[in-house]
Length: 444
Image (cartoon, rainbow, N blue to C red; front, top):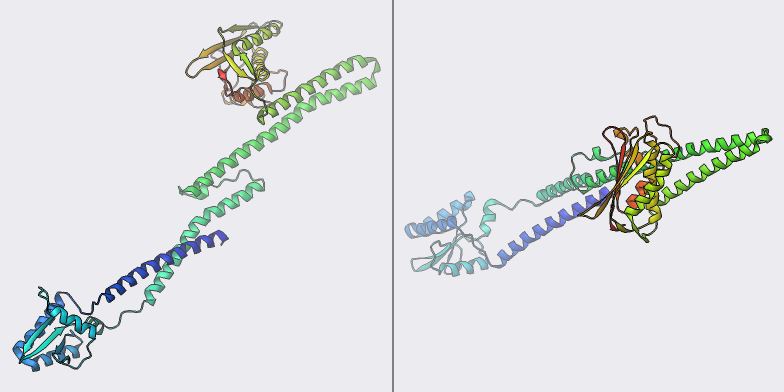
């Protein structure tokens, strides 16, 4: 048993003992109050009947008959009616508590329907009839010992406290074991099934742990894939660099061509490192503050116009549609790169003799700008529409293109850094459509 179990156990047990002691003290104080009020005589209809019966015996049978009746009751352990004469002597010589005698004299003079004490005169002598409260003890014997119920109560409280402490401590032990497993690298550890049907805060904590472990598993898996992809992307240009250097050493007459190859490959490496740094800054939230008022419609139009020259050189077109203006305070360079990556990606994949359509629409309530970039390329499998925005994504369509697969990943982080959203859809008839929604005004 852990320390938490014993803390729960002793806390609950102490609470039960204090509650039991409080109830017992209240009962004891109530009984003491009744005793202090002088309740020295037995009461109730039965007492009144016994008093009247013995008084009638005295009236009709005399002292001898009354003494015989009282002795018979005493010998049988029956009713204990006391009869005291005017000289304060009890008829059978029994000791009479002074408090009971005083109270009996007072009650005998009261005119009530149920008399529990009464005076009778016979042969010019007065006799007082009453039943002392202590006679119940004499009749029924001493009260049972409180040790048995107290022992039962203590044992029951021990059992209840142990059960409740176990119920609360068990899931916490499971949580501790799960944390230890995750710390040891077992990221597939889940605790939800071990919580059973619990619906309390501890079960909620277990489900939160499962979500955390799931996210950690995804993040670390992404990190491993990213490291693998970066290594793969670096390996190819580095291998080509080494080949160019070896060729330059073996064939000095081809030094110029080798240097050109080295320059191209080093440029690719520099571009890859630059994109990785940009992606890293965006994921770390280090994109800077929105510092420039920009017309987003004009920004997209200028990027589409630049992409048109590149597209026409490969037998493709870029069509732009949109009017008006949409002023927003943004990080202009970051948004420029995001729109450029999306549009150039569409130009890269669209088939020859087709056009990339770039549309800009202003939406109201709330004030948003919708930018749509649609191509007529091979599209993306439906299962990969979300994955296209992951770093180093390669489509299963079989298309062989240059690039590192970081453009759309950077675009998504840049758009989200401005409080917007981006998604990809397959177009009817073939092709991919990317929709970007940005707030107009003060972008985040």
